[in-house]
Image (tube, rainbow, N blue to C red; front, side):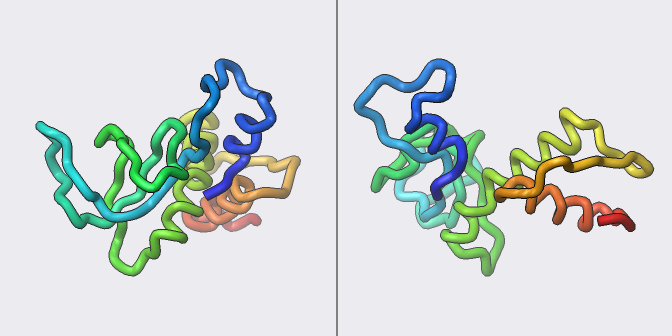
Length: 131
């Protein structure tokens, strides 16, 4: 997928950009082709989504197992790659950094892009009465 972070890297607007040449991409989905020595919980053929640090646009990607997640049945590779980064960022913003919990309120003063759309969906999934 192409996300905001990819655009920022391409424009040189991030700290510590990778040395060129490099391959863009921060999320990908597909089937496991090989499992590294000592890696448990994955096997060849598993359907996964992964969050490599760059290189996701390559044909084959090497990703540490801690950044690879099994796909639920019925979720396409395209949807998995498109959703994963947005939901991860939204979750971290709302619940880890923001400390959102029942009874607390959130004000979104910006309404555009995938992360904000995901934030709104997250409010609904947590049972908020206000949208």
